[in-house]
Amino acid sequence: MQQGTRAVMPRPYEIELQSYALPAVGPGQLLIQNEASAISAGTELAVYTGVHQWLDDPTRSSPRFPFVPGYSGVGRVVAVGEDVVGYAVGDRVIYEAHHETHGLITLAGGRTLIARIGEEVPAETAAFVTLARFPLTALVQSGQIVGQSVAIFGLGLIGQLALRLYTAAGAYPIIGIDPVARRRKLVASIPGVATLDPTAGDLRAALREINGGQLPDIVVDATGAPNTVNAAMDVVADGGKVIMVGSPRGIAGDVDFYWNLHGRSIQLIGAHGSAIGIEAREKFPFVRDRAMRLLVHFLQSGKLRIDDIVTHYMHGSELKTMYEGLLNQRDEFIGVAVHW
Image (tube, rainbow, N blue to C red; front, top):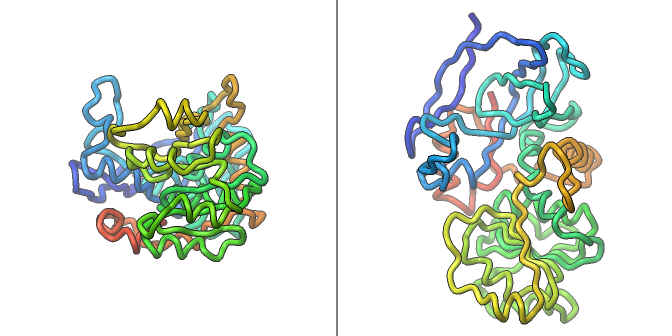
């Protein structure tokens, strides 16, 4: 029986590689041999460090230890089950891949997030596309984007992707806000983008200087730090939108809803990627297939650049080093992918 290899977190701060038997391919299923998978720093580090809010939630079945991490990757179809339509052996696809050598997915019911991607896209870049649907939700929730000024707090992986997506969608100007110089440097050369260090003086004044005397129309919080909502609400224009695309792990304190929300007519909007589901919801027309097709188009057409975000690309056996780097060397580790 053929064997595969996968990463497993047996408990917090531990990661190991384990062998597993490759499953037989049943009706409506595909077996995919993975080229690469990308690390979702927020979710995976929350589980790795044992702080994910669902670990102790009895109403949730996942995540639980032992945990198989990863949900964004690229690979090639190596086996096709009966009744599969539209996919063949040899197809290159992006999908919700774990950190493992092979993945088995079921197409029946339309619940699987999968799309073809061209051979010209490097594996370490293609691995991030499925993950990019999370910051794409911020754009869907923003309404009008063309010509709108956008400030983005946090230039980690999700913030980097969000900034590039707003650029592709026609926002201008865009201001990336982050205290880490390396992160600011990654976006400073993109046309229409300026950067600011939030610790270097009067942030509101600096934003006005960049944006023709006005505060941004849209402010995106991609930090994952709950108290950033205060700073975001403070620097958005009256009547503007604050989009929460990060996954805050904690409770925001001292939020002035009376003045900052009501008094200034601000809209505070949630934009978690799970909102992009299988079927359209009222006032939220995007679905997974539509989102994936758009992201692949952006990437293959050159409208979305990801390769410059990839700071580390190593074998899956180096996952422990990658997690520790993301935790402790934020100025060096941003986009991290592993190959198999």
